[in-house]
Image 1 (tube, rainbow, N blue to C red):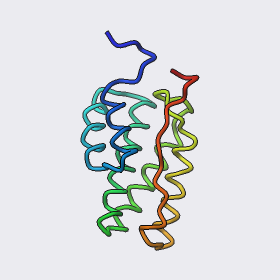
Image 2: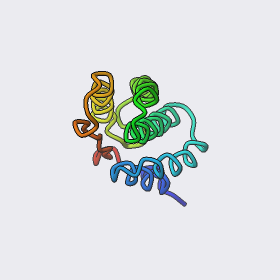
Image 3: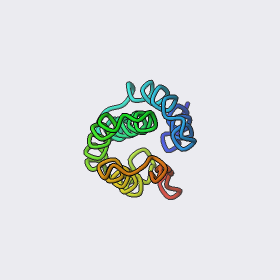
Amino acid sequence: MQNPNTPHQLLLKGIEEFNNHEFYEAHETLEDYWNTLSGDEKELVQSIIQAAVAFYHFGRGNRVGARKLLLRAVKRAESVAECTLEIETAPYLEAIRNSLLTVEADEPASTMQMPTIRFKGHCI
């Protein structure tokens, strides 16, 4: 049985893929986990999925799709509490807001600072 204070294996795998810029894979992994959630947890994972797909689109030159998904990801991340799923949500939110600014400013992909999602040690 999983310890309720330990992040789920699919979440850990999806976050690792996201942090390694394997955005398509992260989206697939996290979608499987997302289907088991509700409330703030579901909102946060949906935000991460949307951000992953946005970065995938951005890397393929689809700025319109990236902007649309980053807007949704920001809105969802704004609605959840810090430490949801033991994740540092404030730095994640700040990073995807900055990513959105890069997309909206039509800056080159090389200037995009990709977020790194971190778990809070004091939450686990």
